[in-house]
Length: 94
Image (tube, rainbow, N blue to C red; front, side, top):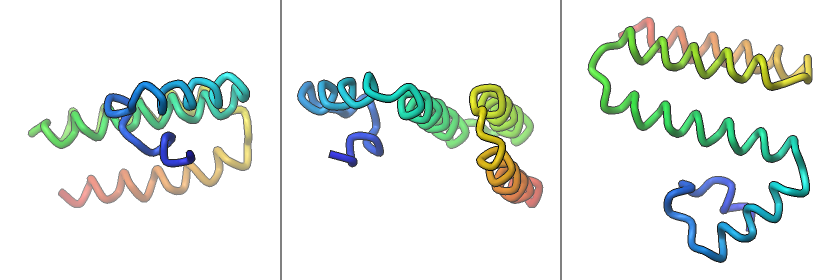
């Protein structure tokens, strides 16, 4: 059932949605991670349509700030910060 966490939420069947909600109710941390995944997915879909690089970067930075304010684990934040800088630098190349 782990694929339900990866699958686009708009494409979940009724049964998959039931399982997803069941698992998310069991763990607030898992629920927050899933919500962040969905927000990232939404940003990514918008970024593919956007022509202005500045707007894409602003959206990514807004997502990054949301992650920072919703994640209390300091070690995770350090790792995430390194990865974010790598992704952001990739955008600077374009």
